[in-house]
Image 1 (cartoon, rainbow, N blue to C red):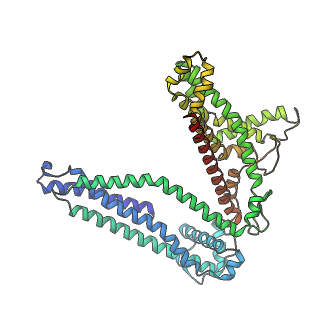
Image 2 (image 1 turned 30 degrees about the vertical axis):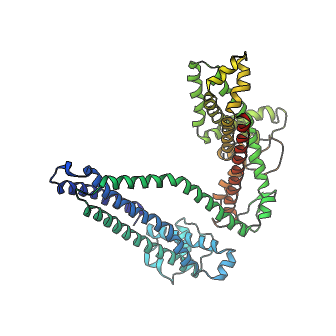
Image 3 (image 1 turned 90 degrees about the vertical axis):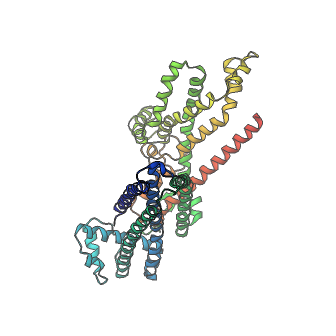
Length: 490
């Protein structure tokens, strides 16, 4: 049963239970709700919680555990020679999952009967041809052991989904019946519901932490798997980026140095544009601008933050690039060979980052107490001296945070780089040459022709893990600077 329909069935059980629970509570006191411990609606909500929460928890746990059980069961069917030929058992499992999905697709289209898809003696070549005719991806020769493993994979998943659907519905019904049975005038439904809602709120608040942990673990596990297939020294110290989607990565050069250089170079250019303009704009809006000008200029600046990055990328490709070419290209200084270059992406990215710096810095500067300004004006300091010696030092921790946010945004930008900076991975100091970044290569590697478990695809996780560590280091360093300054200022 599809997950969508299963969720609808559980919700229907909960809605029916709400009506029955509320009605039963009123019937137990002859329709006089004043004799109930709680309002009638609480008895209905008690049924809803006890029907939905256990059922959904069971479904979530089942969906997390079932793939592990199925993969462990199927991996024992993989011949050793197949794993050695592919280079890794995970590559074979990826092929099995892809073949299983293809069988589901062709049986759903009616191109293959369910009996033929389950037949262990089916002809692998005929199955492969049927999958190709249906537009399914078949990246290697399908053998009988691999086909049998994919058939078992389908069967175990189908059985598991059926068992999950039945158990989830039974748990929802049991929870609803239990809540209806305990409905009576003395039952403290309000207390039970409020405690249940509190537990749900705590769980919702924990999602952010758990999501972060999940992201980190996903990066770590896939990065470890990548380094089992590709040498770590070649990745961290290699200066050439030349992935090859043939031969399972045997001829690929996956050095990260050139990508890191492009990432930092473009980010530095962007920050060189965004930080001065954004900070000066914040100082003007907070200290010099009249309320009328501020009410107009601040929203106009913040509009820049709402423009999609693909629009900035098109702006870089169609406007900024040709403009720079007319000045620094063959018709001008001759420094620029094409419109895609570090300077193109850096300038447009800097424009995009201006509201991140100006808006946050403006809020921080406005938060500086007016008494500090008055204390500076009293001895005769001018407005500019007050801003330079009192306001900006007091707001510096927040300004550092704004710059750090802009730096993180610049490091993680993708579309502007793809359209404005090109795709060349090179080590160069010339800002008018095309370069690329780590994020752009993450996208290209995961949307290429390689298997998801191949080095060319897994390298995306290693790149993401490297960016994560670098960003974390920047955060720690910025926090150290802010705390050190605060100690001196206090």
